[in-house]
Image: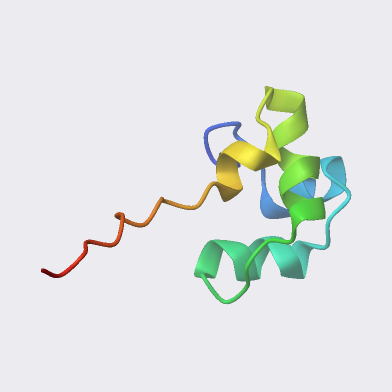
Length: 65
């Protein structure tokens, strides 16, 4: 998303009130975003956190005869 917006990591961090270190770690897969971070980033684009955090349903248990 940051690159699609043409932002540097520092600018992205500043706009969304994050630390540059967090942006670096998120992009490198060394950190997971909190709900607060997801909300900060997603809200201006119309994304809801619930959409991002939706867990896939497990298949129903089957009964053994």
